Image 1 (cartoon, rainbow, N blue to C red):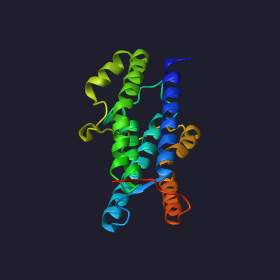
Image 2: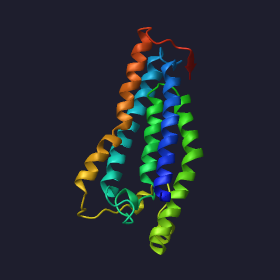
Image 3: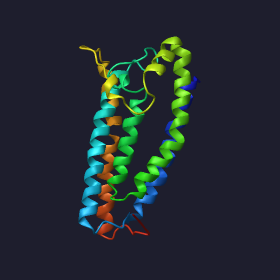
Image 4: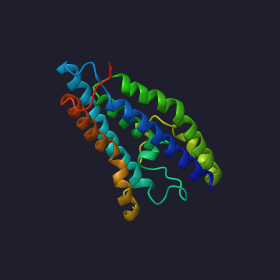
Amino acid sequence: MGSGRFIKKKRILFTRIFVAAVSVLLLFSSSRWEKNEMYSTTLFAVGAVMVGLATVGRLWCNLYICGYKSGTLITSGPYSMCRNPLYFFSLVGAIGLGLTTETLSIPLLFLVVFSIYYPFVIRAEEKRLSQIHGAEFQRYCKEVPSFLPSLRRFYEPDEYVVKAKIFRRSLLDAMFFVWLIGVLEIIEALHEAHILPVFVYFY
């Protein structure tokens, strides 16, 4: 098994375990600010905007890399602003999703876990890309920041060939955070109907 596939499998496994653990937590917890309409509405609205931004951003990234991910070094579009825009937008979506729980604790948890785990993933993937693309990738690393986008570096071509079938398959993945907002709203409704008990309250 190639190192890229191994890293991807480990990342997917870790993500699934973490999502399962957080799901159990959210099933039996609620926000202490739920009855304060101003706080709860503000947190949810900001979170929804961030999830929307993340969804569009992930679609944008997938448009550029689907079908090209290993064989071609992508340096235009979102990849002209930073080397890992897909992870950047994923973090934005994770924090946004956390805010839609109408708490600050859950998005903080997502931020901490991401900050601890994903730097290892990024370093491993960039090591693999360096082995594949050599000096071209090293030059790209010197010119483009790793994670936080630099708007002044933005470049996009007038035309770009999209692998339509592969991109279509990625659409469902990009909608992940939007679907989870719906799941959170169902859980909240079950709490309000006293179908699911609440054992823990978070700020």
